[in-house]
Structures are given as structure tokens and as C-alpha cells.
Length: 141
Figure 1: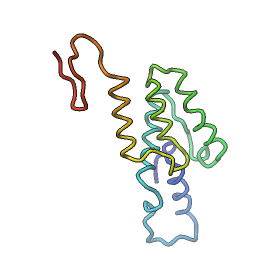
Figure 2: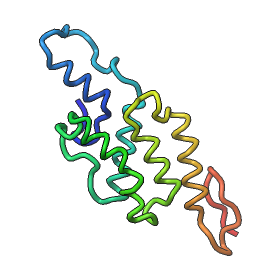
Figure 3: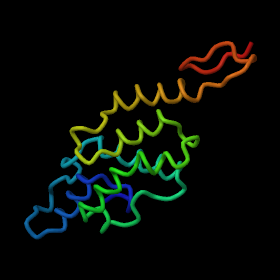
Figure 4: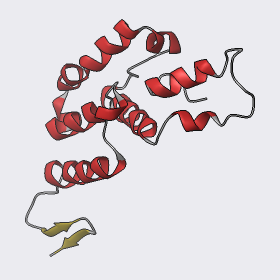
């Protein structure tokens, strides 16, 4: 369940639990985590796009809490090595998506709101031909 290197900690734990002998076969494993797990994965995808390499290469890296926590804590510094790739607002966005504690991670509404800020504020087209920029797109003048 999940793609290696992109699974949120809570998904990884539930997939490990599903392999144990103490589980009932008819339990829907998806009930162990929320859509915040998908937001973690989105953060991992954006990280990979910005860095050109995955944050995690294997499940054992996720199982090892020290390795996982060290990588998560180093996201900001790692992305700042090439800040023009996603900018400071993008770095903040990724950091809030890839948060080990699910309760501290963005929910969908927060992610959409900050994604809009990142896309519009930091990446808004500049120049004399752009008259207006809104969430509905560009209007060229």
C-alpha cells in the first residue's frame, strides 16, 4: 500500500500492521489514516521535483525514526541549496506538507490556501503585458 519513498508515517505503520498475524482480514486498512497522508506524498513529490532526488529512497529509511526525522528536519536547508527552484514560500509549503506528526500537518483547506499564495505571490508573471493576475488565470493587456 503506497509508493516507496512517498508514504506518510501513518500509512507505513498501518501497512506494517496489516502484515501482522493479529489483524482481521475484512478490516479496511484505509481507515487508519486520513487525506493528510496524501498531502505528505504531495510534499514528497514537490521535494523530488525541486531537488531532482527523492527525500526517502526506501521503506527502511521511513522505519528508522532517527533517519526519517533527520531528513524531515533537513528539508528547509536542503531546498535552500537551490532556492530559485521553488522559492521561500514553496519551501514553507513543502515543510508544512512533510510533517511527521499528522495533527501538525496541513489539512486540505490549509494546503489549498497556501498553494494559492505560493503560486500567485511568488510566481506571478511580471512585466508590462500582464494587466491582472487572479486565481482564474491571466488577463493580458
